[in-house]
Amino acid sequence: MATLNIDELVETLSQLSVLDMAKLKTALENKWGVKAMAAAPAVIAAPSAGEASQAAASESTEFKVVLEEAPGDKKIGIIKVVREITGLGLKEAKDLVEGAPKTIKESAPKAEAEDMSKKIQAAGGKVSLKGL
Image (cartoon, rainbow, N blue to C red; front, side, top):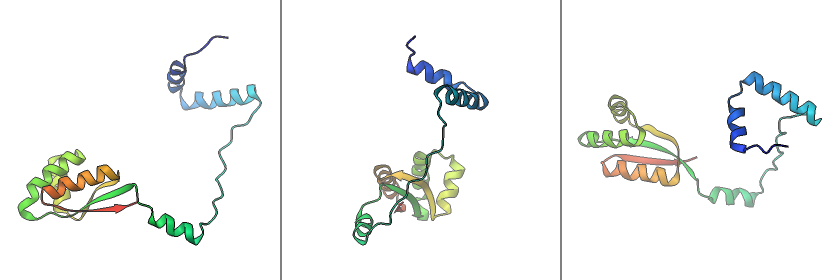
């Protein structure tokens, strides 16, 4: 039996079309005598009152970054920071800043969200972080 390199196998399978993948699935089911099935959803019990309060006390790890306010005399600096953070073009960043309050990023890890917030606040903008 030849030993296949896993990386080569992954590369080969990645090049298959969806139709060929379906045929491969059927062929493997027939060869191995199994049937591929979607995983059944797990039944989750409702948390007790103690668990619920503990979960509420735990801190969010993902945050939505929202530009709340951009003072007129600080807009240029804030637009520059928003462009840096989001990669938007000048017009899109300007529209976002002038349309505050606007979401800058839908979901960001805590450290990234705090970094964005610090940069915008340093430029003169007001930012809020909303835990997800």
